[in-house]
Amino acid sequence: MRYREALNLALREEMTADRNVFLMGEDVGVFNGAFKVTDGLLKEFGEDRVRDTPISENTHCLTANLRDGSVSSILSSGRRNWSDLMMDQ
Image (cartoon, rainbow, N blue to C red; front, side, top):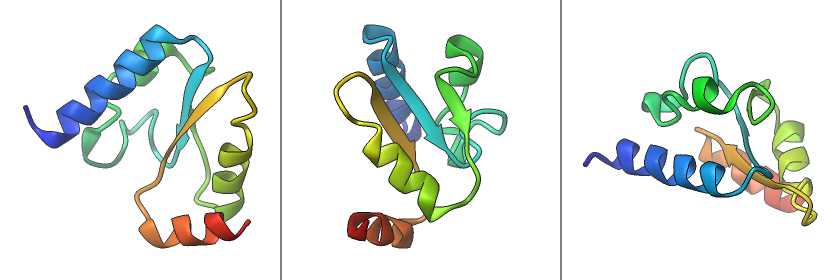
């Protein structure tokens, strides 16, 4: 199994197990994510749970802040340097 396939399987398992889990990030829906990591998730779980976002540090901060217990967000970011900015928020 390739690394991207393992990531896709892990995302699929978590989203199947808990309806409150959703995925946000750049190109995770229509374009199936960087290297096709999120391939098929939009079709399986729909736009309410797989959301494409603009390329924006603020979006990343929003996603992190949504983890209040009522929902669980997964952020897909192909940019490591933005993670540092998010940590400062």
